[in-house]
Each structure stands twice: as structure tokens, then as C-alpha cells.
Amino acid sequence: MINPLRGMKDLTFEESQRFTHIIDTATRIAQRYGYSYIETPILEETALFKRSVGESSDIVGKEMYQFEDKGGNDVCMRPEGTAGVVRAFISAKLDRQPVKQKFYYYGPMFRYERPQKGRLREFHQFGCESFGEASVYEDFTIITMISQIFNELGIGFDLQINSLGCKVCMPRYKENLIASLTDIKEELCEDCNRRIGTNPIRVLDCKNEKCRLLLAESPKLIDYLCEECDPDFKKLTALLDKAGISYEVNSNLVRGLDYYGKTAFEFVSNEIGAQSAIAGGGRYDRLVEFLDGKPTPAVGFAIGIERIMELVQMPEVQREGIYMGAMTEEAVEVLFPLAAEKRKESKVTVEYNSKGFKSHMKGADKANAKYCLLIGEDELKNGTVWVKDLESKEEKTVLREAF
RNA sequence: GUGGACGUAGUUCAGUUGGUAGAGCACCUGUUUGUGGCACAGGUUGUCGCGGGUUCGAGCCCCGUCGUCCACCCCA
Image 1 (cartoon, rainbow, N blue to C red):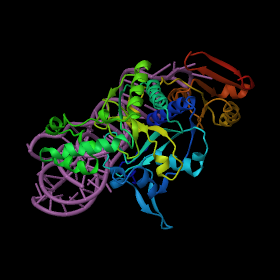
Image 2: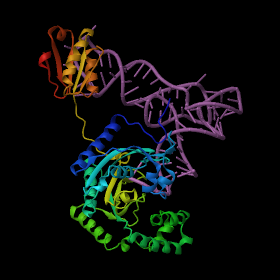
Image 3: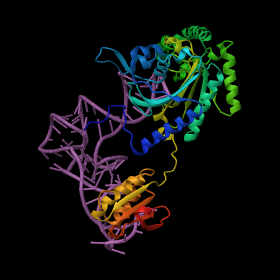
Image 4: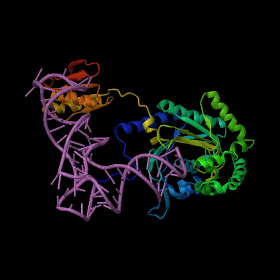
């Protein structure tokens, strides 16, 4: 027996229904906000991710499905969605047009990691990317949109926000932080010492108790924001306050991808295990330029579908469609023209085996049909069908044409 | 990559100090050859993850291996 690869899952029945319900809901809402669908390749040149996600990130450093294809190209299965969308945006030369563009996408992402709760090697994201809008109103709008999606799916969440600053304030802050971390280097844990070199802001997030105490006095990025970033962040919090969206400013919130700047946010749930981020995103005003496009401000997010699968409250399932069956062999073929006609607008289940009455009733119930239509000897002879409404329990015998 | 737990019917699991497998659910068939969900009565299902070893004998003990889960790292 061949099983799916480690960290990859098949979805059927309730699970696949949940999956499509999530996509449908998110899609519907994104469209209301002016987003249109973009489909980009799963396989991209490795260089795309190295340049956008960043060589220093774990994603690029050790988690990519990277290989050489038969033509000798260095390629990767996409580990996230933004890079491909930005590349497509530039490939289509949309960066040369002074028009705002908004795209939503969904699909599989691949990261070679050890699977655990809420973490798979092939997982799915629904995401949006808004290009050409520098206003913090757009950051706010995107956060609002995600809240709306989660509300409609019946998912509770906590929102954390932060500002990562820009090319003016971030380097200034980083310098100060590294200096302050270097002072207490000796006392920090092994991981932290490694992080000072790779991603110093992560040090602030260390779970180690001793580190935490030591880091309490470390410089905060919030205090270093420049004249542009600071008012923007204050504006964002004011807008959220006004909209009644509760949030927490988490000055240690760093996104794992290098391209984020200014607004960064994460939606978390405390009901799903250690991998608690259910959506994340932020502003990435420099990425288009980074990938050889014209400088274009942009902001986006992604929702982890698998992370919210078990949190989604599904609408009640209703009985739907018609079950058709015959109780004598000769009547079976009579069902097909009827089914073809009804399938123009209804869901129809046809049982090909002639069976007893009771057996058909059970079958209709199991198919969760609203109506059970049967043809027995009498009905065959009279050109009629017997129909029962499984909800109201009403039943009647009518001419085939009249049904 | 590191650490821990666990692999027995479709599924959830039980299996006593080693004596060649069991329960609930699900499924199928019946309970007046024309009335579903409920009830009742029957019935099907397993190379006990795989490979070695110890033993007269292994689901149980030992070694290896593969896989799953959970956590760390990191992230959606």
C-alpha cells in the first residue's frame, strides 16, 4: 500500500467540506474588498525565494523543496505565496501602471519540516496582496477584512500588531539592540547568541526565563520609529480602536520573512497547540523594487487553512436533492431520463441496483437526500413515480411527466 | 536537525506474569417482498507497521527499521 508522503494529507468528506467552506467564505469576502483571483505557478526559480523571503530565514535556509529540473534549472516548490504574486505582478508589468491592484490566491505551499500539530509539509494558504497603496488605511482595511473572514467562519482570535519600522528607523534600532545584547551576551542562552548574528529581534522573543528577565530592559523598536512610521502606527491603532477591533501591541512580533517593514500583524488562536498563528501579514513596500520592479508599496497577508480547519463552525447540513431507485429490474432504466432532467438543477443520486423498498429508504436517508423517488411494479405499469419528502414525510404518486 | 510518546479490524481502543486476538462505533443483512433516522437479532473485517533475535511458544520481551503524533527550532 502506498501512503501519502510525510507531512502531506488527503482530505475527504467532512474535512474537504471544511476546506472548501473556508476558501469559499474567504473568497467571497475578499471579492467584496475589490480583490480578484490570481493563479501563479507552484514551481518557481529558486532565486525568487532567496531574494524575497531572504537567505537568512529558516524557510530558505533549510525548509525548501529545492531541486534541479531536467533542463538544469534550479527550482523550488513555493514555500509561501507572496513572492510568486509579486513576481507575477512585475512580470505582467503592472508596476509600470499607476493603478492599484489587489489579488487574492489560495493553494498549496511546501516546506520541508518535521510535521506536528498545525504544521505540514504541504499546507494551504489563502492570501491577499494589495499593490500601490501606501496609506495605512489599507493596512487597517486588510486587518478588518481578516477579522471579518474569521468572524464569518465562527473563529475566535487574538490580534497582535507591531511596526517593524522602515529603512530609516530599523537599521538605527538594530544597531542599538545588537549593542545592548552584546553587553549581556555572556548570560544569554545558546540560542540567543546564535540569533544575535542571524536575527537579533528574535532574541527578544526567547522563551527562556533567564533571558526574559535580562531582556526586559532592552531597547524597544516602538521607541525608535521615525517621523513617518511612528504616526502611521499610531494611526493604525487609533483606527482599530475606533472600529472596535481589539488587539495587543507586541513589540517582539517579527515576521519570519525578510521582506516585511512597517506594519506587521499576526492573528493567533490559543486553541490549536503550539503552532498558534492562524494568519499573518504586513507591509512590504520594498519587495517589488527588490525583485526588479518599479518601487511599489504593498501590503498583504496569508491565512493558514490547516491551522483553522478544526476551529471552523460549519453551517448545519441540510437535506438536499433526490434519491432515485427501482424495485424491479425493468424499472431501473426508466430512472435515467428522469435523473437527466432533474440534474439540470438538482442533486440526484441514482441507485443502479433494484432493491427492496426498505433498503431504498435507508439508501435515501444515507445519501442525505430531501426526496426519495421510487418505481416499483405498479408505478412502472402506470407510468408514475412514488415520491416522498424525507423531511415533511409527505408522499405522493404522480405521473412521471408531472414530477 | 533535537527530544518524548505511540504503531492491534474501516475507526476508536482493550488485550492481565509471554500460551497463535476482542469490544464499542461504522458497515452489510434481516425483524409483514412497500415506509428512512430509533430499537432488536444476526453477520463481515485483521500477514497485531516491517525485519531480525530470545523462547517449546511473542501482540506482549530485546535490537533494528519505517511511520504517526506531540514538543523544541521556526512558521501559516
